[in-house]
Image 1 (cartoon, rainbow, N blue to C red):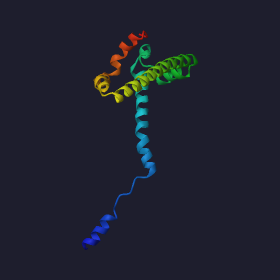
Image 2 (image 1 turned 45 degrees about the vertical axis):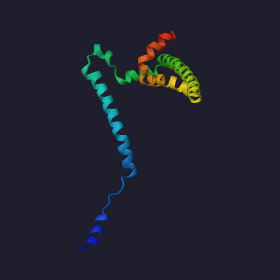
Image 3 (image 1 turned 180 degrees about the horizontal axis):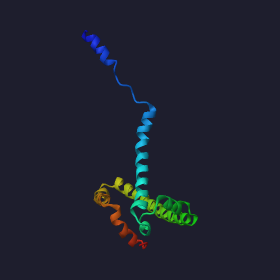
Image 4 (image 1 turned 180 degrees about the vertical axis):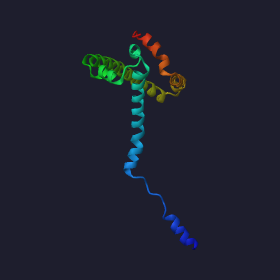
Length: 143
């Protein structure tokens, strides 16, 4: 067998691309298996490990879904709380957009303003937001 024939036979064994169905299975099957495992573990802990009187620590998932999402009274209360949080978030977003535009204009128009403001902007980015939430809520009287 010559070298040319050997090269031709080795190049004809190139593996093919996986099929589309195999790609979908590889993409969706692991999360489905993990989700089913978490739900199974939840039921096992709730019914298998916890006694009846201690089951309030981890309610079964069907009970959580029933009370949390399907009960009208709880749904109304949850939606009202969601709207309240959304209002606060939108107000904060509006204030931050306005201040951001003003600071950006000031920093772009005057070099000394950029030198004065920039260190504080870097400091604000370095502070985790969860660390200053209590301080902000205290300032605005919501806490």
